[in-house]
Amino acid sequence: MGCYGSKPSVVLWILTAVIVLMLVAMTDIVTRITYVITGNTLTVKCSFFMKNDFDIRHIKSIKPSYSFLASAGASLDRLAIRFDNSRDVLLISPKDKQGFIDHICRVNPNVVVLEK
Image 1 (cartoon, rainbow, N blue to C red):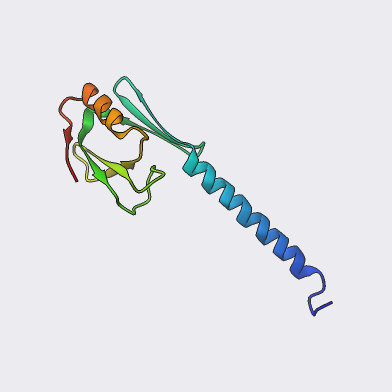
Image 2: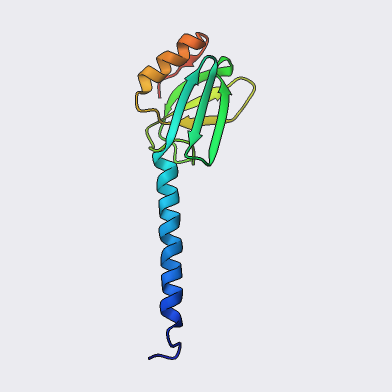
């Protein structure tokens, strides 16, 4: 028995449990990202933590992005969406990027699709 008795093992178990819970939460967030288009609204959901609605009629442009910035995209092969009157960019990674772009353009034919 060392100087600390059994306390290091309890601390180690608690630390391990906290790390495992954090990894499970992060995995849940990354694997449960969904993009839903309903009418003129694009809804982005990340697990049960985040839900944001965006008006498709205000999308100005869409272009491919490989940015390292944190976003609602589970990969680095994403789309950067810019909105009217905003400098903010929404980075997302739909599975069917071309199908997603086509759907957005049907709702808002004024969207400019840019190449990288």
